[in-house]
Length: 480
Image (cartoon, rainbow, N blue to C red; front, side, top):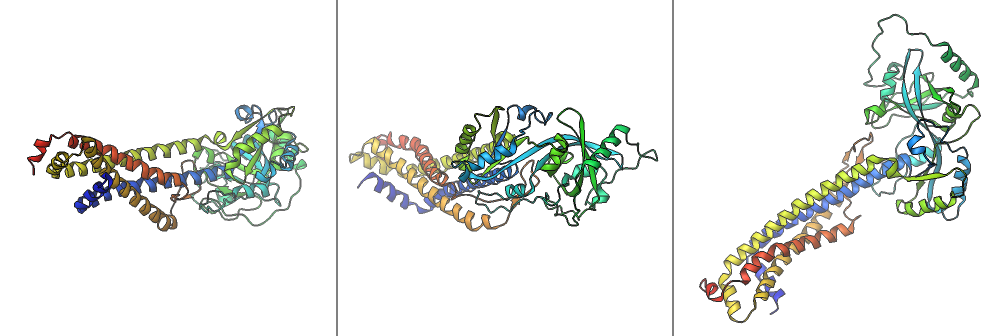
């Protein structure tokens, strides 16, 4: 009879204790797999939302990431359309591309001068149709609903503002925004008069602005906070430094109020059509972009796409830098790191449970079978064989418990958690993401859980097995 068969028979001798130990290991394995799958699914959801907002790659002039916000004109790509056309026409890169679109970031002062209010803003200018396509991207397999975009190609003078900014500018009543606090009344009866230079800028902008039709409908607000369609005449003035240093001003109609989870950003964010942003930065006839947002069909193609874009744009007179979505969104790396540390902590706890459960079971088995150990040693079994028998018992029960836990975890995940419709809102986000367990999406996690728990069971059995193997034959036979 070989040692493995003997170890298996010994497990069946005390079924109750073996089942209890197996159950403890199965619970630990299920916890590791479910939590690991939850972490993997959550990271996928956060990554998907991050890529929806900024794309996989951002192509910008060298130095733009560090200094471009303060001087949008100096670090602008004035040939952005030519770069977009070149990337789309490349036979190697084109099959990887989902969206390639210019974006113009600008900051300045937003004003509701009729009410005598103003505040700083940070804005992004997009092409409406391509922005909507970006926000619908998903390769996570989690069936995440697309994010809404209020930008419309038929409303070139309209955009969206943050909830906090609407409140600061005194637009709560005009936009009929829920839970928005009205401006407190002024101590003086009259609002401060607009300065002569600012009034001249406003008049010049009104003369230069293209005439656009006014639509009567508006898109519902995001993040579960719908806003009723605002008055089509509600508008704000955006003031920013132009390419030559002189201020430019444009008038933007407000189509929607959006909420952001970060209070400071909520008080400054604006999204507007790219032509309107270009007029704010470059003047009536200027064109350019801060960067080119590149969104791929598959995230796995990111390294190859980055290398190809760098090769295509290497001969430009204006050097460019290519940043991935992790560099553009540092909070993504922080979220991933947080969940990785939590998973490591839970895995360590489950390992400790496995160690003590198996060690306790093997110790009890040895205490009950001291006489048997003496008999086996008397008929010729070596110390190493005794030690191997008890280690195999621990390894068998660890492997069986781990397999049972993995099977149970996958069934619970696929037929329970993933169909429950649960959501949560990650830090710094306004949109909820689904709660799921991506167990089958990480098959290496399943195999690793079984292998590690079986190994831990063998390790925890080794010390009691060593003690059993070192028993003297005469001393052990006294327990017969």
